[in-house]
Structure formats: C-alpha cells, structure tokens
Image (cartoon, rainbow, N blue to C red; front, side, top):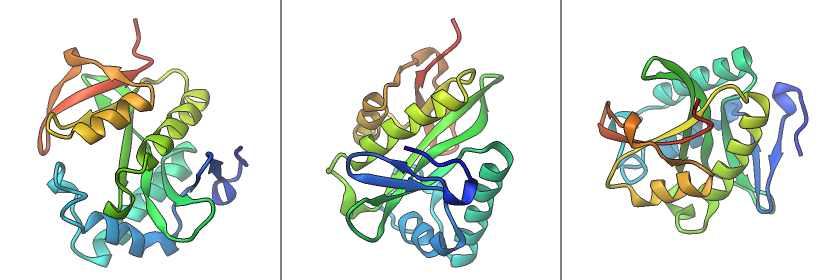
Length: 179
C-alpha cells in the first residue's frame, strides 16, 4: 500500500511501516550511524555529529525530491521508534546506472528479520517504479548477515561485478541485470 505524495508516502509490510525521511529523523539518523557496531563493515559511513546527520538527511531528501524514491525510515507498525533505514539511491557501477540498495538498522533490531522484510518491500516497490534499472547491493565478504538480507530481498550474487569499495572489497548482489 503506497500513497503518492512525497511527504505522505508510506510503504507497509506485515510488521513494518516505511516512509521517506523528514527533518525530525535527524537524531535517529545520528543514533544509528554513530553506533560503531552498525558501521563495522562500512566505517566511512560513521557519523560523529548532528551536523553530519543533518547533511546526510539533506542528501536523502534531495534524492527523493529529484527522483521520487530513495531511503526510507523503518518503524514497527504497532510501536514507536525508528528501527533503521532502507532504500535505494541512483549510482554508477561499472559504467552503468544502478539502484544501490542500502539497509542499516539499530543493533536492538538485529536478528528479527526486520532488515530482510524492509529490503524485500523496498526492492519490490522500486522495481515496479524504475523497472529499467538493476538493483544492486554492495556487501563486504565478512558481512554474512547483510548477504542474507540481499538474498532474501531477491538479489543474487553477481561476482563479475565485484569491485573495490571505499571500505574494502564489495561483493555485488543484483536483480534485473541486463542480459
């Protein structure tokens, strides 16, 4: 179920509610992105100040406004706080435009299937709206949990696209690659 205006959009799953970020989410962005455990495999993503979180929110919001999709704030449907963030952003991989699937969740939500549920919903939603672009996930070889999330969301290993990333080797998982 999704309503169309940027400010009022909501994507619902069995347990989760996803909506585009708003300025009121800056503290949650900082909380999730400043936890060393959540950025263990991607230390370059770690934030250390509210100003950095505000800048990240601005980038996320600009992406939504420009393209009509982006990163979502993930919450439980039946209860309060932010669990984390999941969505896609437009980027280049090997000279081609792709939608990079991102998911980062508070440690308190790990091991509950939340990331897989959110990623599956996001991949389904974005592939309906942007069917011409492949969805990829860049995952560190040591991050087995993130690999499981990518697979649950319907992506498959695409070893031929593996690339050196900012924080080390990126294993690529993909859906809708051109033939």
